[in-house]
Length: 355
Ligand code: NAD
Ligand code: IPM
Ligand code: MN
Image (cartoon, rainbow, N blue to C red; front, side, top):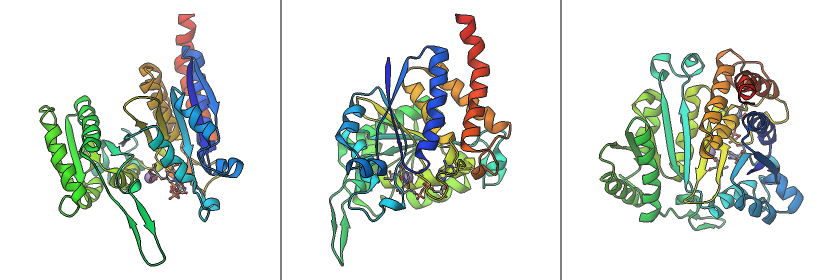
């Protein structure tokens, strides 16, 4: 049995998580994957029910899991609160040591017209952002007074080395190109970042490394996205650049991600937030959550099932079943159901043949 902890969270989180879990349950049944799901409170809903965004029972379950699926957390309801739902997310990432956040973005062949970029710029874009997830400004010492506030940005050599290795290995498995993004013309942490990345590069002579300043990278992502294969960057830059990159495929609602540590369970979540503006209306795009579920299957060693789920998702988009963010009129549930139609069409004959 493979234990999957589901943290639906807030806003559209439960809506998209439902669709992904139902897809996974179908695949697990048809393919005998033995996935067992267990749902826990996390984020704003956990503040409401337990007074904290990451209750001990949720953390204990997450630690003991084989994988964690997360919808999204946060919302205006908790914006003024003493603890915010987002603190639970940062706490979970940090407690599980999830330093390596992978965010793949691509323009699906045949769907170039969904990109806000001209087709000649968008066509063929396929980029993996490798974002350091538990260091930098997010986790440095903070002060907040009436007239002055500070956030410490700190990175150590081992923190940079371990994420650089992840990025080089990813580039090696893809098209062999790595762009490290920093602000080494200004920031001390970026100067160390660049030095360490150069050193790690000597172990990967087969990977072509270049460096870009983050401002120039932000520009190149929309003017020349096909120049990128893997982007390696620190926590805050990775947060911002991955949202920018996500829309070149048409919508932030399509991007999934994985967050892994050196050992223990990994976490899989879409890169978008709880989208309070569209929550509860059955119009959210569950694509990014389903893509995250496919990444989870892959990480659990079910590469075939992962490919089937990705193919079913792509087929749904390609046949024109799309949610409102992509200019369509399909609801979140209807989109998920269509993905499952495609899954059933693929896996049921196979399951019968095996039986
Ligand atoms: P957001 O990603 O929730 O929304 C930004 C815009 O994208 C909105 O217009 C929204 O409607 C749209 N959008 C996002 N996901 C979509 C989807 N699946 N389908 C269709 N449209 C989608 O970002 P925000 O509005 O800045 O943040 C809202 C809350 O979510 C905040 O509390 C924030 O802290 C939180 N947040 C959480 C996570 C997470 O849990 N991993 C990530 C980002 C933001
Ligand atoms: C993300 C989110 C989070 C981040 C927030 C909600 C803490 O924006 O996962 O991209 O900044 O890492
Ligand atoms: Mn973000």
